[in-house]
Length: 115
Length: 184
Image 1 (tube, chains in turn red, yellow):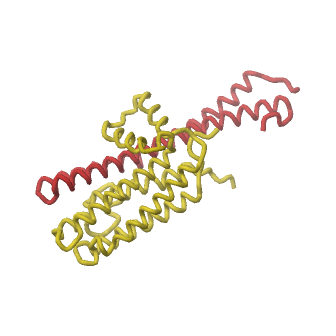
Image 2: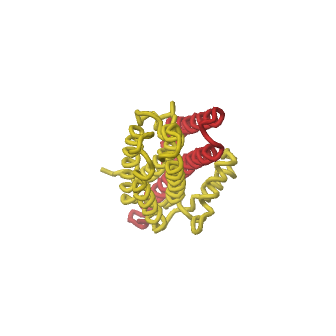
Image 3: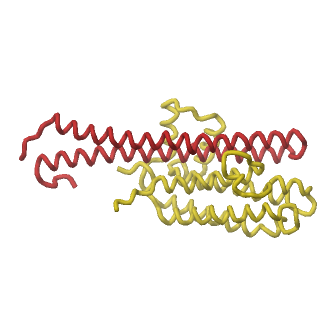
């Protein structure tokens, strides 16, 4: 078995963790700026339109209620997709760390001990 | 390790084609809303088609195993004090409280939300686009062309169509988000 340097191994694992975290969270921040906020703004605008139509008598309260409920479900969809996206990024970070650990251990024992 | 539902090219294809067909339908409705061609009775078959396709997507998604429940991720977000407004949380909770959806993936929840909004549009179309309803009720349901106005952040004078388009877009986007990166 080759010499196993704990500091080097930790550095390699930390590097993988830091690199994947940076790329994942950059993606999440970009997603908030370019997708979540503009979509929520669009929903807010729709709510204002519904309010205006209710106020001027174009909509009955029943129509307005149905349309408001649809906006709430649309906002929920944005949140659910975002949660899914964050889960995926966490998954990528965990898998990057698992891969790094695998690489470090297999290199130390000089065989593909962990597939 | 798998935290999200596994990617399904089947769901990706089904959801994308549904989104595309829905936008074609909405664009066409913008042209004919307020005329007899736009009456619900002339268009009702479109809704059966859309709703059946959404049901297929939900069933396919439910049949996939793996990943953590979407509700758990949202619960974790709440514990981390990420603000989720009350009614939105309620909407997600309602979607989650449907039979057998408490352990549902985010994709299944999105399919459920899309079905609910599609059904609202169908109901409003039936109520507002018929020979006895005032034409303005039908024209305000679909607004005027171009269709792009209901998809981007900006003027959206067809709130319900916009809400359906958003939920479908989130469904398509969520499936794409979990697509494994090609290692070519």
